[in-house]
Image (cartoon, rainbow, N blue to C red; front, side, top):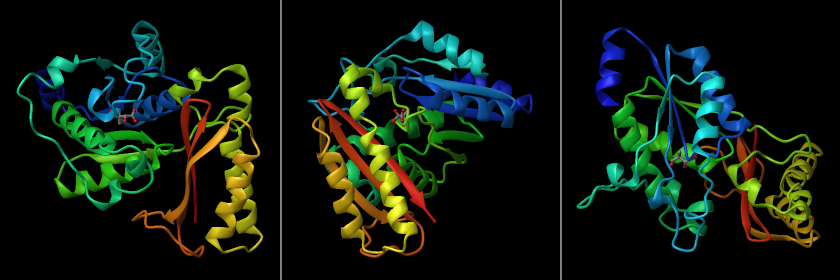
Length: 271
Ligand code: PAF
């Protein structure tokens, strides 16, 4: 992969990179299409990164429909699929990890200890292998994008991080590879995340500034849904992810909710 990229760069090609865990959906395809528009060569990595999953999480059952993913990625404009094995990425004796500080501690970082260490490590490795000019990430994983941007800045990695909008189903559910775990009944309940965000936005538009009041209303919406269990609901400063008490400047409303056994996340940035 590295040799291939060196050659492409020597030929003056601009490289766009879309890192993924696979199980591609419209959200991923929107990133690939954007990369296609803005670059000469588009690389998509498909790697279910073991070190970003906790011991009780879904690493083993995470879907791996490789043939379908290849087809979808190519149809959206990918030139190269990079699909390394876990042994290639973490050979025996591997011992270097990337840990981003405060940004990685709250929200999903608190709920999934070690998750962002795994993400930052694999993304740093992928950036070294692919040497892209631009790398594309979805806003659905808002904290992940902030952590990666910080890592890129702190480690002087010469790549531009491009954040792309959340792609939603018609009923508002944010697209996610994990949506396929949902039973038909759970799938209906799963709209409670985007509904809670919509209500929060309406409250803010009507002039309500108190974060506690907004979070309480969001929690009511999730809890009135029999299959929903709140993991967290937070309103944070959109840059440093510190919780805010009053709506001021750019804030991100972020939530993680279990629908049955499936943990889903969603967010909205309010300017
Ligand atoms: O968002 C994802 O799909 C993953 O966390 C990433 C960025 C590909 C790292 O494994």
